[in-house]
Image 1 (tube, rainbow, N blue to C red):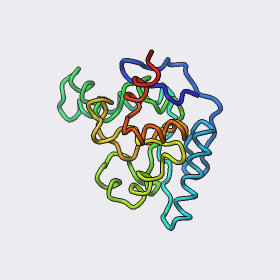
Image 2 (cartoon, helix red, strand yellow):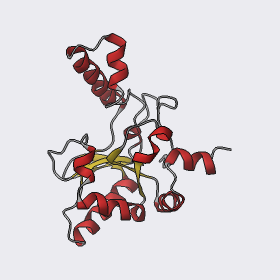
Image 3 (cartoon, helix red, strand yellow):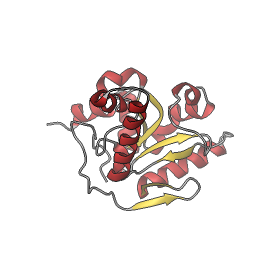
Image 4 (cartoon, rainbow, N blue to C red):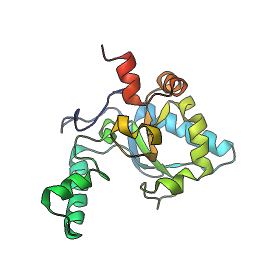
Length: 193
């Protein structure tokens, strides 16, 4: 498992990369690497034990082919709306990363919501929930980080996504939180030698 791997346009994953072992979350049918799934299950259960409706996994592991389909669909949607050729593909990146550039392919990233119908695209609606506030305080205790924080957009290169969490392990998550570092900063500080 690549807990600290940074996946981006500058560092894409191979089309054939598939993490192992993948397990399926039974309610939403979201696939995650086993260690991330077990941590998410405990987080969700503890959230419920604290009187909140648990967050649900909306999106987990995505293979390269599926990422390609999502990206091409978004570009085609923009073309239908009048965007011209290459601009449509560039603008599509604002909502859907090109294939191989999404950390969902690692199997340790999860988009969360409050119901099966949630679409993880409205930052303000999820950000205003008690579940978001709870996760902001406790996700690190389960090894999760808010992957694309609002104040780190210039570092991550990805817009703020309060629904997108990344499993990095408890030790790393707590250290990132304590030092107020996003994954890129943390990796550069401690591992890029």
